[in-house]
Amino acid sequence: TRRRSLSLSDDEIEGLDMRFVDGQQVRGAYTEVELMPQGAKTKVTPENKKQYVELLAKRRLVDSCASQLKAFRDGFRVFCPGYLCEQMAKVIEADDLHALLFGEPQIDIADWRDNTTYWGGLKESSRIVAWFWEAMGRMKQQDLRNLLAFVHGSQQVPLGGFSKLRGFNGGTKKFNIRCQLDASADHLPTAQTCFNTLIVPAYQSCAELEKKLRQALSLNQGFDEGLFEEY
Image (cartoon, rainbow, N blue to C red; front, top):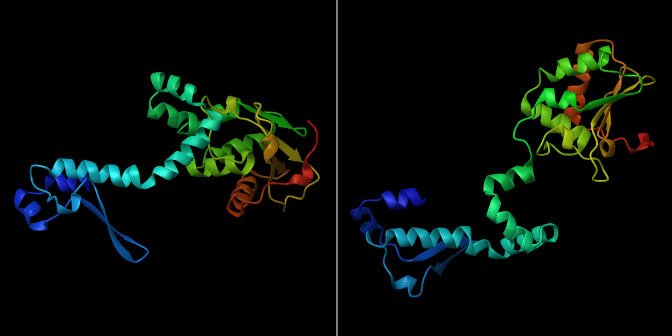
């Protein structure tokens, strides 16, 4: 590593007898790429070790994957043109871009609940709804993300929270819970991911609801295209 290379003593550097090359195994064959002109003949010394580490890092982190980075850049600029990237670079940093791409770092159950609607005879005071949020309160962050992916198709909460959740057409679409009264309590919850809708049979206890919900998440079986309808 860079830190390890820079921390080597002068004697250790001399003893390693390194040159300005990047040596790697490629498909079972050892190859070397010069990090600079005449790199194979240029010995790494205590005086130039920093330059060696910088060139090696550039080779492995930038040059060796230049074609992949270019493909990513070209694809990204289909949605974010070059002129817009230039303007964004003036006002946002890497952390800001990460937030735009990956959304909120934590799932806030209170925000989720505030941006949930209810169908199929349910309302916020219904016992099924109360049991659902009680079960949610016992879930870890990864369990919550799995549930969101089960219903929404993605584990990521948009930047700005659940009020920004989107549906299949790109417009905002709140998380929905719907009770399926004609489904047996033996059935697992299902989901309509295009509409951010969780469909829950009329279970008779919170424990039963939580058990069936966790079972559905473990099996990852929730997309029920046959249940689509106009809303």
